[in-house]
Length: 119
Image 1: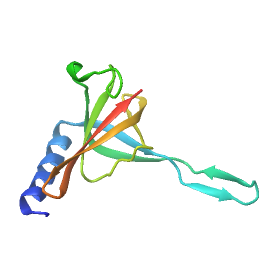
Image 2 (image 1 turned 30 degrees about the horizontal axis):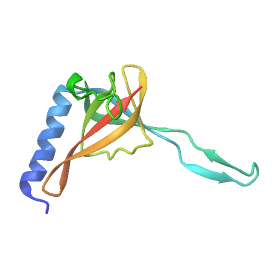
Image 3 (image 1 turned 90 degrees about the vertical axis):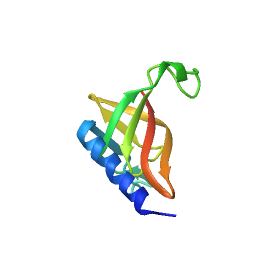
Image 4 (image 1 turned 90 degrees about the horizontal axis):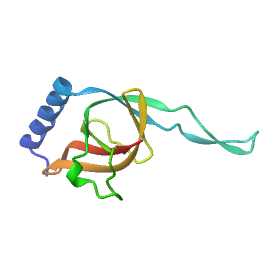
């Protein structure tokens, strides 16, 4: 159930990420369409979406070598853009692949997404 408190937490999370975050871009793959003349699937151009977020390194104590590897980063983003596993995240001049997405919720509202990314 959505509440005034959870809506306020969404606003606070976005405000803090705007103030202390960095420039991060979510790169969403283009739409796949069928080309009748070429008789093949054609993937359109990717879309770049600015994210209100902050990338942080994964805590070394959490590295287990399989699901969390050394060098992974967590991109903490606000609720406004819903990430997908097929997306890429671009920051520091490099593109990172999405490995996992964790929703942070208050009541029934998503307040933030923690996106685990890997080179």
